Length: 322
Image 1 (cartoon, helix red, strand yellow):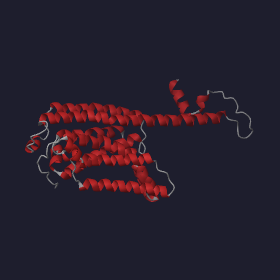
Image 2: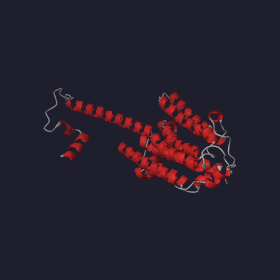
Image 3: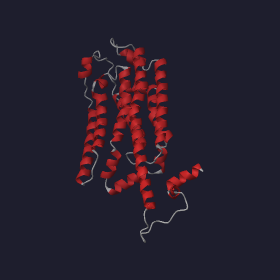
């Protein structure tokens, strides 16, 4: 059984409290410090073996861990059990921001490169299994990103997470895990079971925008969420329950959309880089075709077909357009 959270409102949220309101959450600190230590030790092990690890990846991963601390031990964590909108900020960061930053750190690649050979091979077999491919099918990943907030806010789970620290920790862990699975499969910095086109990531992002709006409207116009819990706080400051929930609905709607913009930027950047890399490879192969033959030193004989028909990728595209 989880520990019930005492239903007592903290002091009024002021600008001073924004800067000075901190709380100790030993479980969160232990997990974050453990992940940071494990990542750092993995990077050091690679460097001792002479393997370079991009500093940018380490920076992204540590920033992701910092975002967990930001919404857990700062004023956001202090008032997460008091203000609906504050809890919404916490949840949207854990689902959309933290996992994106962690995925940019490529932790699975680091784990693969530091595992012993037999363990790495077993992990690779699991990663490329039929079950893993089915679980990372794009519609499944879409549901993993969209469904958690609907389940949280439209079921008794939300109030249960307010009343129990254990349930709240499980919800936070679930949000980060669901978000990481999505961003991991879409960024493809780490090895993935599937290599779906990047355009699917854009389509899923559009669907996520739509569903964010749906959830925002439901919370804005629908009944109060966990009204008895918030009423029992006897909070005499800040917005009333209805306005508090309306602000929270806006946070989930607009905040979710804004959090998705950096993701789209990263996806477009990676798509352009892969296109450039593919163009370089194609140019190199075409240069090889135009080079002299290695045995006689004479120019290659004239071809009876158009040059792009000799390239497998371009030939396939050419046939589709005929």
